[in-house]
Length: 182
Image (cartoon, rainbow, N blue to C red; front, side):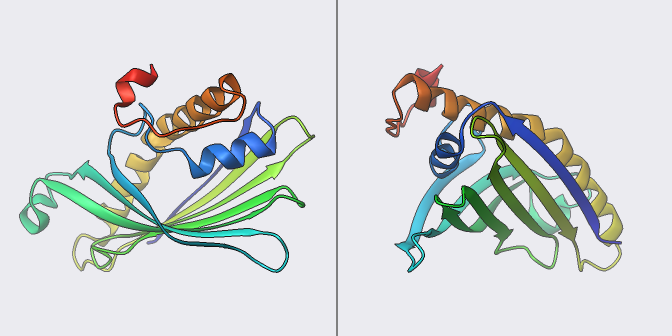
């Protein structure tokens, strides 16, 4: 059975800050599992929307029942496609792993929207699906639970970046040592 999560969160930051933070959310002290984030392509389309494709590499721990198949740790390659419409104040994003898809495919759809000119609402839908015969349901349920336990870190990381942007007047620079950000 495919697992789904739907959740939303309201950030006390305007859309411009939230969308800039989204593009610059790594590194942050709440995302130590992210090894790299690289922009593969970006462009401004005919309607003035920023379209971006990025590759993100993350690492993580695996449950005991998967270790015989993949080992003890897992690097996962994630493709991220986003569209930011500054006029309509909407950011749409799709992310999915590009490796280990027989074991588990995770797809996340995000929508950032301006709520009232002051706040930004983020709505998320996540789908977990496995084709791994014999462990399908167990893998999907473990991934669902793991994702739920990590939502607060994701929110705190983005909030951290938004606060840093506000402190610096919207200016952002990448720091290699995230401990200096604290």
